[in-house]
Amino acid sequence: MKTKTILIVEDEEIMLNSLVEKFTIEGFDILIAKDGERGLEVALDKKPDLILLDIILPKMDGMTMMRKLRKENNWGKDVPIILLTNLTSDDSITEGVARDNPTYYLVKTDWSLNEVVEKVKERLGLIN
Image (cartoon, rainbow, N blue to C red; front, side, top):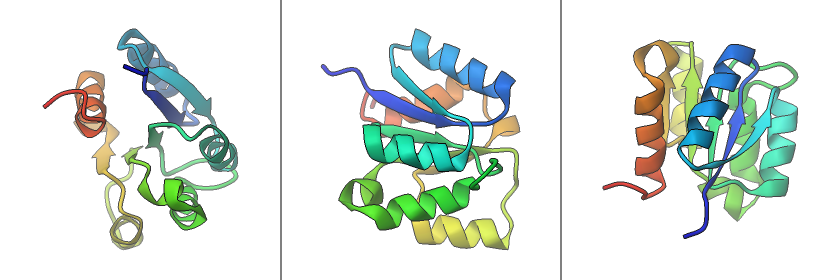
């Protein structure tokens, strides 16, 4: 089976390093971006199997990146996106989630790394 590739778009160094380490140990190939503009470029160029996306990012926020991806092409419309953020949902986030259809919206403080890995594996069909 082909190794699954995850793009992690996260600007907080500690969180980014923790996610990279955990998903590498779990056997995933990892791509990283520290801002939304670079995240969009990497996503469109490399076409990862799934994107872990923070909302508060430099240059382009995660909601804008997700909206642009969804409009870009068939791959962008369908790629699984998990929003992993410190923000609790407000009206603008709820609108974006409804419009751009991420796979999950996870608040970082409510989920352990192991639980995030399980959600990723579940979405990629690696577990039942």
